[in-house]
Length: 414
Image 1 (tube, rainbow, N blue to C red):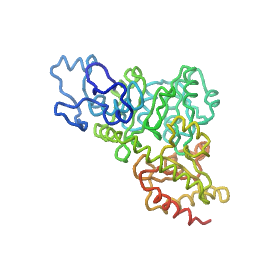
Image 2: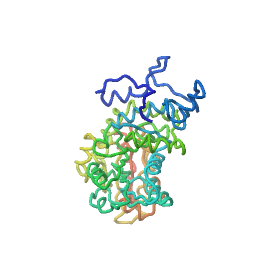
Image 3: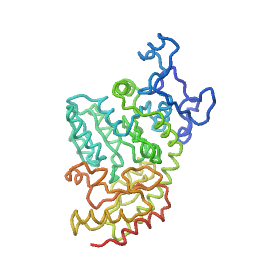
Image 4: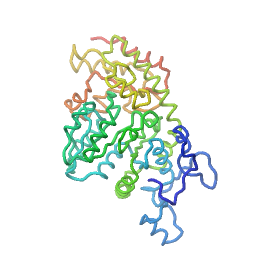
């Protein structure tokens, strides 16, 4: 939801900076004067009379009506995230994937066309390339980094360009401004999944994107507690196209999960900086290890889009890195998978889970987890080989993380 007259705002200076907005934006306190935002666990709201109820249900008067589409706690989370992204409005959803589904269903119709990076999250590829095709929305997948491929894929029916930057798991960065120019020249929208960076590092709207997608499950929460999603963007489209669909379809975020994400955003900036510093140190160490073939991390000078990523991401590489264990060239995919599993199974600190964004460092094998539902052809097109390991660096001591990975790397055998 956004701010129509009727529901007041927090009285903040217009020039309040990001870190202040992250702890202050939302709704004014209740008459009880709480300092920590209130949690409204209610399915519905009471109206003073039947006429007022009718006006509110008809959207003639802004008020809280039913938690499927209006709730004070959820609105606080939406307002805070919109402020951090520099967006006019935000709508919270039950998950990051629900946010993508809501965006596509709200903006597009049968016969429309999407252009999407071939390197995005596996579930996004399945949703856009498979599930939406059943409803007449076709998707063309192109190289994340080749702007000419995006331009060449345009059709008269193209209505949406969808990118994820950096990508999961190879951390490829796309030129947001260049894709925005392509989209807008064709009369299409550009949506950017900002999950890996969060607004603490990157604000895609500043570079010309129309919509920003979030899996609040990741860095917005920051401690692996809840599933959440959100879309930030223009008020007209969110209120006119997405809120009505949410009201009908109900991919809504629960107030409790919204409250957890709301509180998580208070520490977002300091977490992202600290985790990015640890990730850079770990990436540099891995790059020098003799059993590592290649490291993917935007903060490394060796990363193909290093300069672009540093420009878009406020000089920080984020907290996610991936690396390839040596062995695939000699022994093929089966040996590469075996060696990757050995490194993962040798860890004692890293959590073996496909989630990311946690204060606890996580490690996973993308080919068999986050991208396991894709065909081998789709995985290879995205550069995801059997020897690839993804590490989402948390707040663990980086020397302990080095020792954790070294245990497996130093004991690799043919």
